[in-house]
Image 1 (cartoon, rainbow, N blue to C red):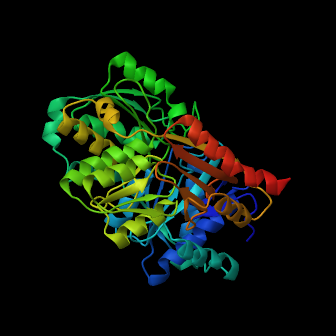
Image 2: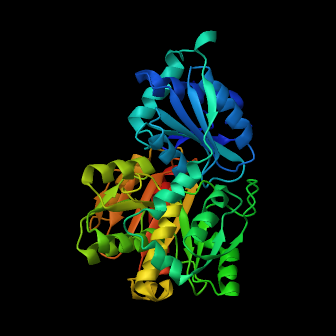
Image 3: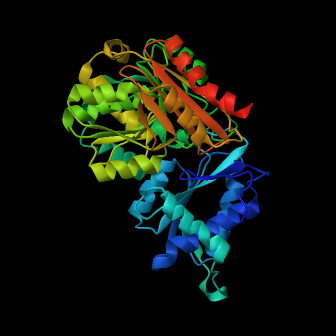
Length: 455
C-alpha cells in the first residue's frame, strides 16, 4: 500500500483529512491493526478518540474495520490518549486504537496504535503490522464478525488512578484550594481536567472547553499559543495555568506571574516532585531542555537520552528502571501510573510541588539555571540528511555528537538537535543556550549545511 502524503511513524499514521487520510486508508490500517493485534487469540480492542471534527466519522469506520477482522471493540468514546492506554491495561485487551492527531492542525487526523502492554507499537511492531496490508488482511466470515460494547467509566478510572498516586497528598492539596486557570483548546481535555482539578479541591477558571474540535488557535501548547491563558491567569489571580493539547498527553504551564516558561518546565517540575520521594534514573528525548537534566543532577540521579517518540522514551524507561521521564513537549511519563505521557498526572504532580513548597512556581523558576530554547522547522529537503549531519559534525569537532536520532551536538551550556519530524513533512531544528542570541546562532549554523546542499 502506498503511503504518499501520509506520515507513518512510531506515532502512528497521520494525514490531512480528505487528502491523504481517507476513509479507505483508515479502514485498511484499522483492519490490519486488528488482525495483527488479535493474532494470539485475544480479539479485544479498545477504541477512543479526541474531539476532532472528523473523529465521529473515523470512529464508525474503525468500528466496522475491526469488526470485519473478528474483533470485539470496547468503545470508550471521547477520551484522552492516556485514558485509552490505561483502558487497554484495565481490560487486558489485545491492543488499543486512538483516533487523534494530537497537536497537529485542525485539518489533520490520525490513528495511534497501542499494544497489549499499553505502550505504542515499536518501529518493528509497526512494520510487522503494516506487512499485513501487503500480504493480505485475513477477514472474518459472516459467523465470526466482531461486535461493539461501550465502556463509560474509563475517564473516572483514570482520575481515580491519579488520585491514588503514592506521591500525592490529596487532602493537603485540597486544603490549599489552589486557583487554577485551564485552557483545553476545544479538545478532549474538557472531559477529564476540570473534574480532576475539582476533586483536588481547586477553584477552576476554564476557557475553550467546547469539545467540538474547532481549534481557535494552533493546538500545540507552546508558549506563543498561550496568550489567552496567560491573560486569564493574571485576571483571576490564579496560582497556575494549565493548557492541554487536543488528546491530553501534553501539559503546558503558565506561572502565577502570567509567564509561560515553555513546556519543558512541566517535566522539570514534575521530576523535582517525584525525585524527592523516590530517587532514580530520569529519561528524556534528545530534544528536551537542559532544565530536566539539571533537576536530575541536583537530585544526584542518572540522566539518560532516548530517541524522540513516546514509545522510544517509554521503552528506555522500562529498560533502565527509570523513576520518571518523558518529553520536553510537556509529556510526563510516570511508571507508577503507566508508561505513557499523561497530562492529568503532570497536573497532579505540579499541584503537589506547589503544596510541598508553599510558594509560587515563579519563585521556583527563579532558582533554576535559565536557558533559552528556540524551535525552528523547515521543509524536508531533497537531499540525504546524513550528509547534513556529517557536515555539521565536522564543523564542530569540540561538540559531543549523538546520532541515535538525527544529530544532537552538545556543549557544556548549549546544544542543537536536527531530526526529521515523525508527524509532519519537515525537519525540526532545536537549539538551547544561555541567551536567545546564542540559541538563534546555533539554529542558523545548523541550517547552513541544509542551504548549501540544496542550492
